[in-house]
Amino acid sequence: MTKSSLQRGFFAPQLSYRVDFPESSRAVQPLRETAQRYPPVRDTLSLVIASHNRGARIGPTLASVFTQTRLPDEVLVFNDGGSPDTRAYIAASFPSVRVVDGVGGNAGAARNLGAQHASSSLVMFLDDDDQLHPDAVDTLLGLHRAFPEAVAAFADHTFTDRVTGAHVANHHRDVASFHRIAQARPVRVGPEGRLFDRRLYYPMLWGGLLQQPWLVRRDVFLALGGFDTAFRSNEDWELYLRLVHAHAIALTDHVISDHIVEPDRAHVSRSANLTDTSREIIRKHVRLALRGLDVRAAGILLRRLGRHYKTDGDMLLHSAPGAAWRAYLRSLRTWPFDHVVVARALVILPIRLATGGQTGAHNRPPV
Image (cartoon, rainbow, N blue to C red; front, side):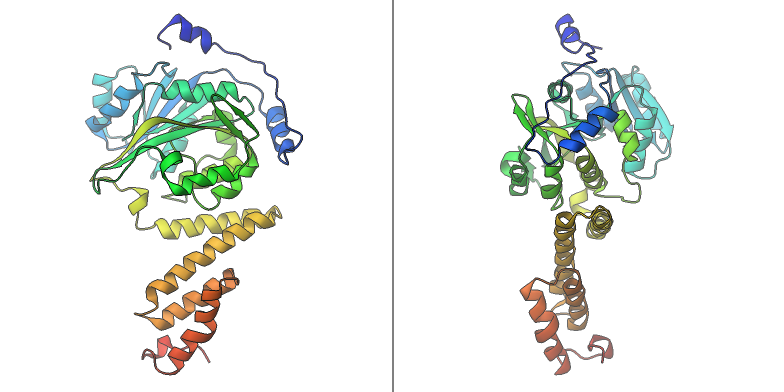
């Protein structure tokens, strides 16, 4: 569905393209393999929203979908848990939206089920509390057409936390961690954005750099297995790591949506299990890196894991030296190149514990 004949013409299906592979790129072979395994697809797009007990509050999100300069070919809400209020509200207010009831159990599982039910070649994911800017679909489809080697397209969003008052207008520009994107040399740069190959994977190992809403080929998403449902937070970062490791993606700095954290909804930045989930994701990707003999990736991940254990030790250092000592030892075994950890684990804490730094047999180093 489009709003003008001009838009219909611009987004008419195109089933052929020419791919130029830069000979200097070490990721030439993965790009070639992607082009061979996944031939061009039609520019039909299903916008998938996974929603849980949202009811009428999904209204602003859906309203933003129908202000698009290029409307999706299908809008699908996966009604996780089968909320009758959500279904009734959508039927009354947005009758063209397809609602699928089911049980996902967490955000990743619900998105996976939504993608399985989608009818288009391309899937765009949107959270049920976010709002699109009018050019969001146009922007992501424009990236898809400009960089046909890419299997997914990403942009930026604003962030507003209605609990703390925090606001970020542009992550790529204003948030220091996102400057790591510059560490990866693009395969190609155009007016629409940049094409990245596996080189983006390494700066992404330090933390997420890609965000929702995003667009992906449905066949590639399903072949990757979608979101790993074992993770209840950071599941998007984990999937993006697998995606970028295997395929090329397109990225623009353009802001296409507003991400809003509401008072009654948990967010990953305040999730109680965020640290534990991050560690499990790191451990998973350490195994994948070692299996693929990727020493560089394994080194980054082990260093991150060692920092996690060091943080545990720092938090326990004054209240429970024995537990802190064990955390530092674990950090040392994981990443033995941090001189602070070496000093605390092998010198400072053993002396402190041996001289009665804290009473209690459970705090003493093993004999």
